[in-house]
Image (cartoon, rainbow, N blue to C red; front, side, top):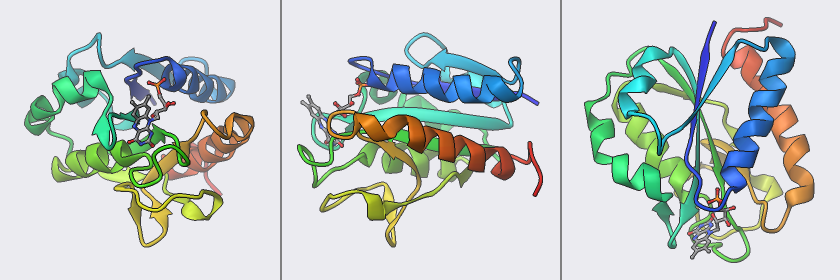
Length: 174
Ligand SMILES: Cc1cc2nc3c(=O)[nH]c(=O)nc-3n(C[C@H](O)[C@H](O)[C@H](O)COP(=O)(O)O)c2cc1C
């Protein structure tokens, strides 16, 4: 099976994390994950995959990263029914604690509205923030990473998350 990993990144952190996620998946099967910079592909490419990972940092106080922002309206034309999408975000919980990783919620709810099922939720208790559009009842709608303050935790967070995703995507069974 194929997983499409789509990411956008302004200053490189999300790009690096997308690479780390792919590296974990490559350990299982080096042909499983195709990686795409959303700034360089048409959003329609997403319809080619039944399983996706989508990465977006939050910028400009609660806004999407630039490439996702430009393409946000065109996401309304996507047919995503039956597809599973795992979101990951990158943000700064101390600098922007009122909008921590908002982009995960903004994009995730849009994909859900197009018929996708969101998977890969994570516990919000490990973070210090006041508000986030990516949280529902204390649970993040995806993986959230904070390379500005907790870069030392990123590898481990990705490792755990990808391990869980393999089950949620049905690649591994219990
Ligand atoms: C001007 C500016 C605004 C930002 N706004 C937010 C925000 O609202 N929420 C958040 O969690 N992080 C925010 N950040 C932090 C970035 O998301 C973080 O640095 C991230 O790692 C950038 O990812 P990228 O390198 O992939 O673009 C902001 C950073 C800057 C410089």
